[in-house]
Image (cartoon, rainbow, N blue to C red; front, side):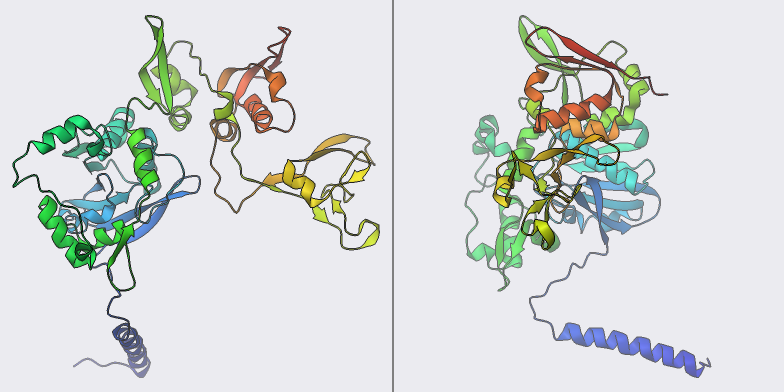
Length: 444
């Protein structure tokens, strides 16, 4: 017979009371409250500026296994399948950006970027040489990772994922022509009805009839919104997400860094394909091993400019001789143009600045009356990314028509950042043929 001290008994009783209290609360909840029965741990892993992707962890022992879903699906599509793999390894699932609980940014849906999201998860979770298991469009992501980071992987398993050049096969006329030739028993027609969306159970039955298999209910609930009455709402992922991913998978829509060559008088994109993030990881030495010849990278002015969402930065004097005036935070003095004090309306028209003088040191300095708005999602333009993470990465930076980039423009700001990314900077005016060169000492 076991003996339990009074303090221990009180501890156990407290635990029992707590558990009973929770159970009692759950019993009083509405009947339409649904909970995912799959035994996984959910976490959101940052993979990009302002972007986090959902990662499911089903546990298990042995080699790390990473499941990647097909087009339109989330990692929950594996909720029934993944637990069966835990006997053979530690199983994870990733929901790509734009779907389910993952962030849906305005851009970043190219094959290279989606592959880099997977790589970031592998690095953040410190997975050791995982095996990637992907369905449908995830084959493109796995192939890119295999090409660029084979040393970090143990293997690739393609589940009907070798041929999927576009995210939406229904947009391909040849594909649809083949579908129409299928026997009637295989090629089932008929769209989803209101009755089919009366509940998630009804939706599962429709999928079973339509494609021969039903997803776990957790997947349906991550694909569709749930209405208060328990019926199925609209699809969570936006049409724009599907469209961007479709374009990202289309070789006719180039993205990232593409090698171009002159062939028969025309510029063609072929050869190496990479990204700034990949260049950063390779480093200068790594890139020279991959491409030992002199390389010229070209970037358009509009694509290069900084991409912060800006907000105005000024003070409002509530007392003293400047009562009611807008003031410069650097000086505390009213903001003026030709002796006229500016109002808030003036700030709505453009981003303003002042050249102010330090009364003590007698030096002038540039005082910007705007700053990055940290409350909004910040998307990095190429120049901005290089300025943050690739200082003096390039041997030369050459900017043409720099007389058009002067002043308080986004392009002008980008030019200043670009100046930091190269060891030598060459500016071409584009008018008189003059140029200006800046040299810096090579970094170690």
